[in-house]
Amino acid sequence: DAGVIQSPRHEVTEMGQEVTLRCKPISGHDYLFWYRQTMMRGLELLIYFNNNVPIDDSGMPEDRFSAKMPNASFSTLKIQPSEPRDSAVYFCASRSGPTVNTGELFFGEGSRLTVL
Amino acid sequence: KQEVTQIPAALSVPEGENLVLNCSFTDSAIYNLQWFRQDPGKGLTSLLLIQSSQREQTSGRLNASLDKSSGRSTLYIAASQPGDSATYLCAVVSVQAGTALIFGKGTTLSVSS
Image 1 (cartoon, rainbow over the protein chains, first blue to last red):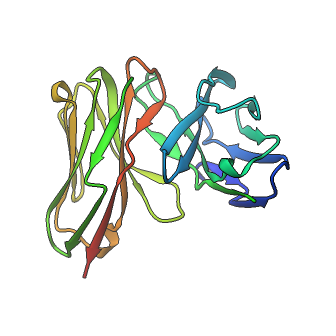
Image 2 (cartoon, rainbow over the protein chains, first blue to last red; image 1 turned 30 degrees about the horizontal axis):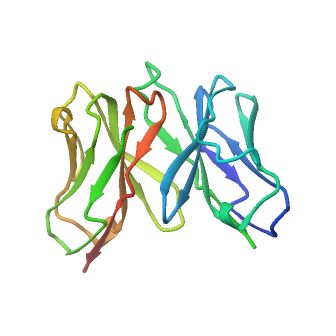
């Protein structure tokens, strides 16, 4: 299996522009997570999906952030409009397991976003 | 609210030394704890997963222990090598928080040859 695939790996944009990050989870995994990593705050959960349905989006910082999962093999995280404080590494992760809370989590390589 | 703390934030050791990384969590009601490794500019790689009913897990030179009642876990690395240099993060799935992992900020390890 190719693992969790994210694109783009790097994105540099100007404040106010729309940013779309993409993720392909591991085939057969029914949970997908979006995390954000910064030096100050570490890894923070933004949102997660189960069987393509958003379950908890309480970590999404503002209405400027939105996430979708139209099918089991694809998810997007969109920021519109982007701001410099959104600069971070955004990770997608997926999981499956015998029960909802016992599966091992697998991460993608991340998308490094810089907003100027 | 579950909080995960890792001390120290950074650690430097000479090659060959055995070392212990520490992780503590405030709420002992967890489903499992997972240790990850992160290399600079890379994603996280899962090292060990310990279920709440387990006391330890081993993989090669790595051994992770879990003391749920005291809210602590340790990652023991035997005979450290320069290739072990990375940031090590622990994370828990909290009963209260549900499915998502809650992470510590990590310990950055540097092993010199």
